[in-house]
Length: 506
Ligand code: ATP
Image 1: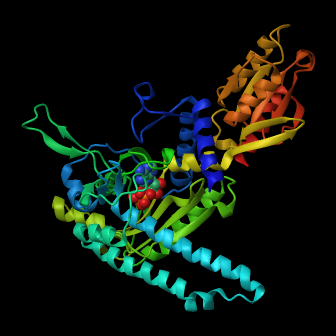
Image 2: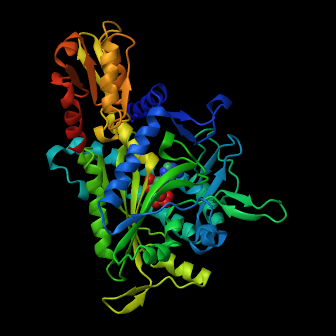
Image 3: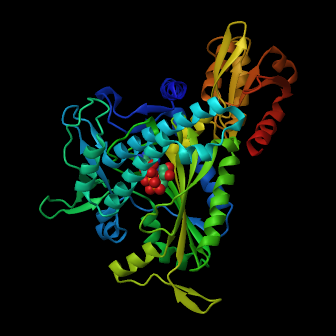
């Protein structure tokens, strides 16, 4: 654990030092859980977005992309259930003045008890060696049984209390279990209150006449309310999808872990409209497709896993997360949800407008069912950074930090260096740069020794460095150095583009 926490700290420091991510409003001491993407970060973020868009929209003839407004009619959030149900229970500790999500405090407490059981099992496994039967041990050991009973007792009170919005019951549970504030160690808690995660603002020129509107907490609703417009104008036939990327806002009670949980973030969502009754087939299809997408970036398969939901949101009949092994452990990166006809039916009801599809094959009209894939762009960014950050010992006291980014996502694809600032080498290097820069993001640098320049580009993940030397002036060849292997090859200037392209496509 300590090592992984160290890794997150190192990634945060590296992201700042090398121009990936800055704390928002840093010169005013920052704004909590809001971040700015810097010169390299915004390129990486854009490349992730483009990679997603290309695979979802360009590669699927039956998926189109849209870009809807952040502000929407307030009734949309009533219909979608967000006004009434997009809440988290919060509680404050009066001594530390720290705020917590009440359900997370209880979940953390449960995790501690589970940890005790795991320790008990590990101890016994050591004692009994090969003859150890874990299942039997768990079913008979009195200490394990007592802890399991505690866990079930707590869950049997927590889940109904959450379902019934019974804040008093949650408070009583926290008191009965004896949960203390991790900061102050005290049990001096406030009441538990429901906290709606939507940000609101006023629209209109005068405060009196103003209408409260919300900053969207998900991009999906912009797709739902435009479903019929897109279907008609695009002459889309079911099954078809609508994709969109864009900002979403949630007033998270506890926001931490860098860009994992932000108050302003970006989503990449796709709603796939299907015939009622066929949703489970498409749900399974998109689960698999999305997992393949992640693996296509060359990230090892063992870094991902599915987590199927037992407890479903009010709109879903099946849901799974794709979890990634972040430095903080396995956590949700993407959700795949079978949302039934919940949203479209709710919008029919609240708007009074029909949102039906006439299926020419069945000669029937119906409200389509929806399977959604929803991924956080910032979380994907953190997943990519965590997977790519590598410290390498090069022997003889040398080391390097290299960002082994998937080349297709790297902010710069090629760095061009003249070996020295003399003898016309910069002019030649500039010529190469001009040739390549309309096809690739290229970086030109002539300052410092070549080794130092290589290290700087290792640190931002540039897959290729091209060096122009005296031989270049004679035979039009350069050395091209590959980031991960550090292998250098001599190739013709005319071949640079092809070598790089091959790697990007691969
Ligand atoms: P969590 O349980 O982590 O709060 P969620 O289940 O509420 O997430 P969804 O509503 O399914 O998340 O949103 C879809 C995706 O949007 C998530 O898988 C995640 O990648 C991203 N996301 C959600 N909330 C945030 C946030 N506060 N900051 C960054 N990304 C987020």
